[in-house]
Length: 233
Ligand code: FPP
Image 1 (cartoon, rainbow, N blue to C red):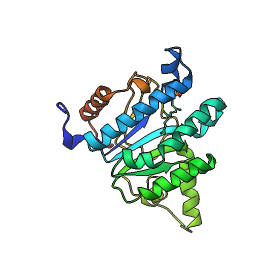
Image 2: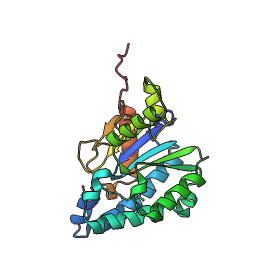
Image 3: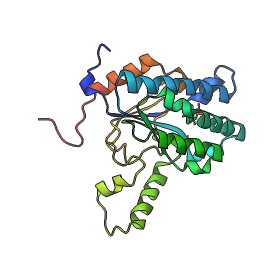
Image 4: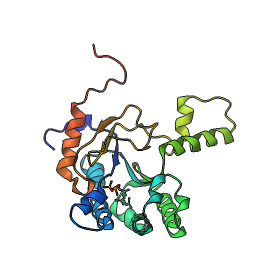
């Protein structure tokens, strides 16, 4: 871990895992194989964050509310991955990690809903947190929070109250967000939680993002001067 200062690592890291389709296309492969490779990368990188760098919270954008517009074959492939991932394999693969799904997962087939709920229940007391965005939209999350606030009868709100109603209630904001594939957008991901996050856009497509890229990203994060709107003396 040379060049990395353990004390200055992000406590909450987010990944927008972009470029699976283009990675596959450039190899003459179907898009689904890009997702298969992206899925392997996801497992490798999230474990590296939790267990090597000891980053306690990792957030992943795996499926947006707009992704329903993709070809059915691709959606079905991703649904199978979500079902597989949120099974007992998650509990075995990620000791000490709590699964927290962000987004309306009830729109997925029952088999996914059952697994997600069982996995969240089994892992609920773990201290590390994996926020998995599926059928997720940052704007919808704010609407969901506002509806929760109204239903609970609040007459006025503060930032702290809003935070209690987000999918990430009780968690610190995102410190560092990495979007792969050279696209410079947030695409509606964790809009509230990213307010002061450092952003990083490496060119590599997600399936090619390896441990070295992660390390380089963290070194980049550590070089940033986080002022939170203030000034340095
Ligand atoms: C973005 O690449 C990737 C997605 C929309 C899906 C990512 C999902 C996975 C890798 C599966 C994760 C699975 C679990 C269980 C968390 P893209 O298809 O938009 O790539 P492109 O922009 O090159 O077309």
